[in-house]
Image (cartoon, rainbow, N blue to C red; front, side, top):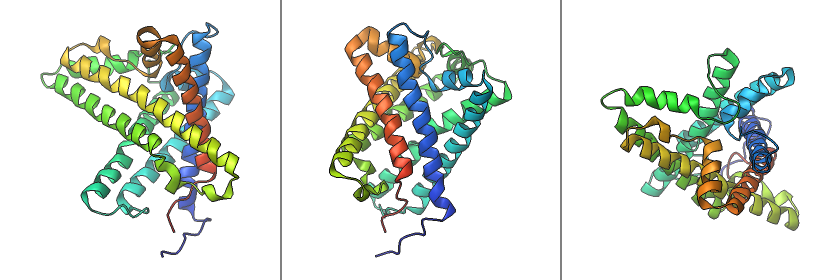
Length: 271
């Protein structure tokens, strides 16, 4: 049995910071989605819009930096996981696919980090009301090129693959090897399972909708089809039902709360 890593090792803190910053973002997005549903706020249930909104305030600027640094930590950790294989997935077909899934799961974090950087530098046109102007502008630039439509479709395929990874991870409780859950009481363990299942399913649904519309935008050569998290929520509310909107919003809050727990009790190897 491999010897347990020293818990004081600096590598231990990468997932901790990353999970906590992710928890802040998605707990806030879920709350904003509910506020928007009840007409208490005008949109903004999107990662980039949240960062732009926070940047309007001094305390918010500090929080944007915290989120950026935490997200970068998590991306580094995910790359470290996929390369070093601390959970011994192996080099077989299943192990390689699992490690690729780990790498893909860092894509949403990379997009958050990019948005945070553009917000800090003041080079973004991110709208605080959740309109996907930045994303549509990027896609419009791609579609202007002869090969751009297939790039947009490919992005959609990758995003949908990421959504599937999220759904499978949540349904199978794949997080269990990453959290030192033995320290908790039976009631807390059940709560963690529920938060994980609800959170990953909600995130998988939102990411899947985003990926679908990227594919649709590429196939129809239309940047206007592109949606972000805020507009994915709107799609659920308008096309699927208000009850499902509320369920996914609550699930998004659950994801944020689960990420807080995961960060605090993260177990960086199986030893």
